[in-house]
Image (cartoon, rainbow, N blue to C red; front, side):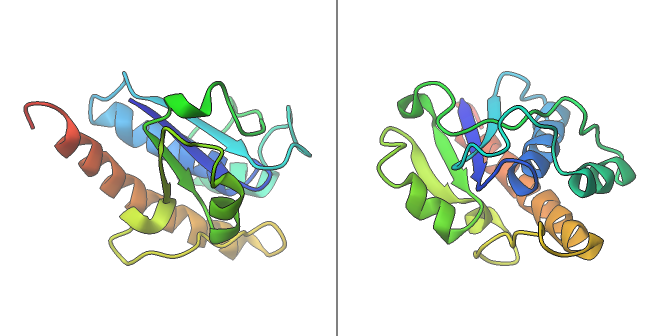
Length: 153
């Protein structure tokens, strides 16, 4: 299975989601799931994630250091089983660019309800903590969905 998480610049929301979702997938024994994050824009390609996003992840016990921003598409967009947009603008930007995938909103899996993952870039640390809480609970639900879609589940 191949999953992509996509936001605008790939330095805040989607890399936070990639780190947390990878942690959850590995913890559930799904180390064979290919997971990437990307941005619809290329302004930050090659950069580390936003220092506030990295600090929030580190504070919660995650390792943010391996991330480097990249632009969508990463490889062949048609090969992804699931492409998860962080907000409605990202979803609109991705429409038609991920034809073979299951293009959805990331929070379609959120047990507290669908919607946008707010962009914390122009705010303070509380916005990053809010995003992390959304990402953690939604990642748990995504892993449950992946588990139920596996043969023999």
